Image 1 (cartoon, helix red, strand yellow):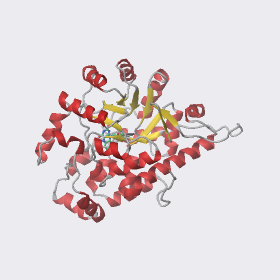
Image 2 (tube, helix red, strand yellow):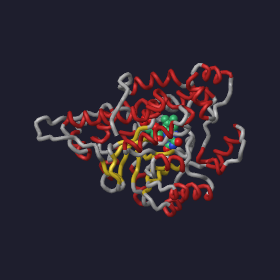
Image 3 (cartoon, helix red, strand yellow):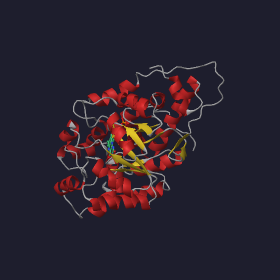
Length: 382
Ligand SMILES: Cc1cc2nc3c(=O)[nH]c(=O)nc-3n(C[C@H](O)[C@H](O)[C@H](O)COP(=O)(O)O)c2cc1C
């Protein structure tokens, strides 16, 4: 895939500014915000950026190679797209746009249980390459049905989410009365009227809906019924008892996402997970938590080589990807960065963000004279 980006937006900050001007405030704030006072959100990126890398200019160096093998597949770059809920609310067709770009660039796309495209549609777009993120359903029947659908659609990796035992407290969403589909308060209508392209595209595309969950929902639910359905259907709290039937039923690779302690990694290994994603949900759940990169260090030290250790939360550029790999992560994911790009640039957003990240990472690897992704830790200063 040819690397091509729009030169008016060479950094994530440019994309954020543009996204903010293109989508209604309630949608932008849902994407952009953390939780409580945003302490964890800010720490995530700040602490990644404390990491320094050492170049070795006089070594024999031919070419830096970003290709990385993970779970039996060779990806073109050591980063992928984190699962994000309600994507169609931020930009119509956003999950489809990102899944297509991920497939074309040969990087993984993780589909969220609560986004606006179905398991089957994304499998079709990615030719069976996407990963699937499972919110833990309270009813065994729903759980088994979703897992079976992911298996039938040949998803290679199932990602069980552990860091939403309760919903994060997000003041902006509370203020905005965030709902799916968007509630029609005067405030929200004014915000929508101020974003005519978003409004028109949403009108043409149709109201966003939880496509994967449709078979389990009654038709024509109102807002209140939808909220009750969500509370009834999902119980985010994972434990040994709830993991065992998932591991039993799922024959592919199994990953635990939302890991922030060595204890959880120890348990993940014991319960037969193939990988963990060290993550704090992009600072959206526990404002008093550690940054993801701070959680990563002791985990890598103790468990690297025993289980695939991946990380997301706070990564905003190819340099951040390099810093995270140098800290010992086997692979990285980004959530908001890709969504800012789609909200800013629509159909071009997926290709733009992936190209930019690949170009930036290649530049850092060439600059420090690192030929292979797995050698990045040799360049870590601190
Ligand atoms: C708007 C938004 C919605 C999210 N929805 C989900 C979700 O449905 N499932 C999930 O596992 N993680 C979800 N996450 C967390 C991301 O998968 C990921 O962990 C996080 O965005 C990484 O941090 P970053 O945005 O700083 O890259 C969401 C994150 C954002 C920003």
